[in-house]
Amino acid sequence: MHTHDRPCFTGKLVFFLAGLLYLGFAGSMAWAQTPTGLEIMKKQRDLQRAKDEEETQQMTLVNKNGETKQRKLARATITGSEDLSKILIRFKAPRDVENTGLLTWEAKDGNDDQWLYLPEMKKTMRIASSGKKNRFMGTDFAYEDLRPENLSLHTYNLAGSEAVDGQDCFVIDALPGNDKEADESGYSKRKLWIRKDISYTVKREFYDKKNQLEKVQTDRKLVNVKGSIWRADEIEMRDMQAGSKTLVVIETRAQDKGLKESLFTAAALERGGR
Image (cartoon, rainbow, N blue to C red; front, side):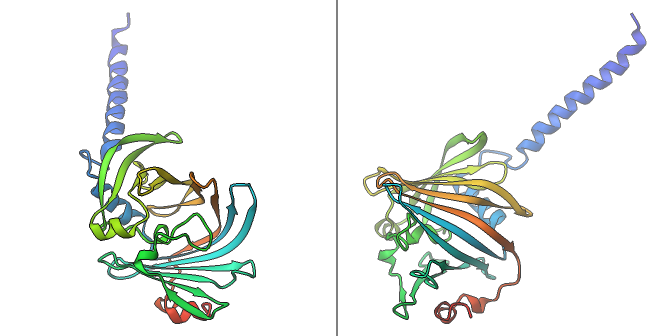
């Protein structure tokens, strides 16, 4: 036996064990202890918000018979000094919906403003809070699905952990936080799957007023677009009750281009951003 070899072996073993301990420590650095549902949501909001961003989207509407309609959209978002977002969605094609637009202003108290511009009527309509449960332009998305997640309007309960596509996720039950929200929302609750490694929501379940599963949104083909910001290149909203679905594929995107606040006004909505 060559006893002089032992220190070398022991050193390698110590190095190996230290490496394992470091990996375990690094993996737990994000959360020193089990976080609350609200802490998880706040972290996600902090990590995933851009100053501004633009996307062009190809949207496919599929009805219960498998018949499809194609639409092309542009979506722009800006986040202001109070960490509140403004979102503009505008249809580019086909001709029958061209230049139809939806403008959303996030409000700190949750009473977001939404305006829908219909070019054939040359009229902008304000979406009443009681109408946010309605579907947007024949899609499987409701107006409330297109608003930023307002953390003051809901309670978030951590329900456990579950893997989605092999990635460990927090599972959170999101419930209306007050009587007004419960009355105006089309949902009794939502269930969210948020990836632990990147703080991104990859799956949402929406439950109707009878607490029956109504819709499922799945975000796929995730890409790291900048820093801590992740986005999905493909989003599917499936209506489990109606048998329809809406598929959104991102064609182009850009972050932090310096978009102007003047783009996100009712006047800009009506003039088509020109």
